[in-house]
Amino acid sequence: MESLIRQLYAYTELKMYSFHTPGHKGRRDLLAPVVFPDYDLTELPGLDMLHNPQGVLAEAQKKAAEFYRAEETFFLVNGATVGNQAMFLALLPKAKTKKVRIERKAHRSVIGALILSGLTPEYIPSVIHPDFNLPLGLDVAQLTADLEHIDALHLTSPSYYGTVSDLAYVLRQRDKHKPNLPVMVDQAHGAHFTFGLFPQGAVEQGADLVVHSTHKTLPALTQAAMLHVQGTRIDRFVLRDILGILQTSSPSYLLLASLEQALDIRAESLWNDLFEEVQLLRQKLNGPLRILTEQDCGSYGIKEVDWSKILVNVSPLGISAAEAVEYLRHNFRIEPELWDEFNILFVLGLGNKPEEVRALSAALEELVKRFRSGLNSAKRSNANASQRSNVPVYPSSLPPVRLSPREAWLSTKRKIAVKESLGKISAETISVYPPGIPLIACGEEITEEVLTYLLQADKYNWQGWQGSNRGEILVVDM
Image: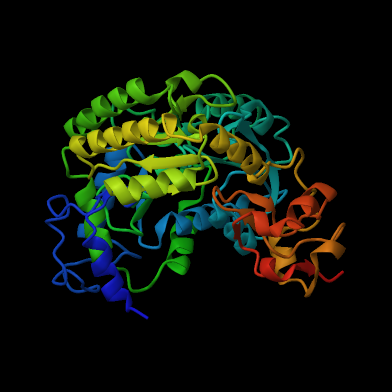
């Protein structure tokens, strides 16, 4: 078997066009000030300390706070994952009901945060867009209804696919009905929302805690992220203490330096150039392909759309996304972020160049020509129709929460056959990937609808389910 180093070398030699994370896209000029291995250092005199910053790191975090208009910003070297975990743990000193309302399309790190904190979730289902069969929206009225028994709200906006929820409405309802309620936003995929061509950032709108996965769209190294805080609803002493517990005691100065560098780049003109090319791409191809655009705003719980996420549905061509991706990779060196049965997501970052977007546009045009005019189109359409049964259909109602994720995780567990699991409490969080939204979360009851999907294990790609290939599931031993 090849070594990892050789595999990395072999991959980079392919010279693929990157439409996936990280946002620097391998551009050396954007990362030139971060010198490897020279800057792979530890906490030395003059370099400050991440867990008690008094010097250059304190100044760098202050500059980041000013950049995002936050009152305080913390650099994260364990990704946005540690930001989500810290947010939930910071709620504990003031939590009364121990309940947090969370939209279902939350990242799996949020489930981890619930296990660590012991808080009980009250999930709000995502709104499914029928053209993409993806959870792209949020019913914000449902999220903000009856807040008296809730200790905090947690939103994921933008979604993985670039759809933005109506945070302004959420904050207005909070201020009207429960002014002391913290609103936390996982804006991992929106670190670039501070620039003019994008939706307004969650910090500027007034959220109490906001996490950014900086490396996803800006030129920071993978794992480099930020957590922003403002207002008095969150105890910052507790937050700092928690970050000291959760984050490594040996932070990478390469990651820290890349966070500072990511904010020093004059990005506005770079984004402007990309925006123009994306608009041309959509004008040419939204029709032959189904592309998520601004025209989708105002429906299915979508307030705005991030144009730097190009979500393409290939159903009009009568082919699967896997077939399209193979064609794009093999013939045009196009590397997307992810795909499912019929959708392909292309993610732009500050490291992309306009000519790369033009290359993507040309490749998609050739894809349309190849499969629109090819032979056996009726045969492909029939295959397409049969494959639709494999597309994940999200449960019509969420499974009832019987235990908190922490209670279920710490409980005595046992493995049983899936076919015998109806009514049992799941001790696993099981998701179909992509997009990774839990079909059932740890601590929830296995319902008939959930069981229907679990019994068809071979039709899906699973995340978090260790016994999927054996027909087994881990349940709480009651």
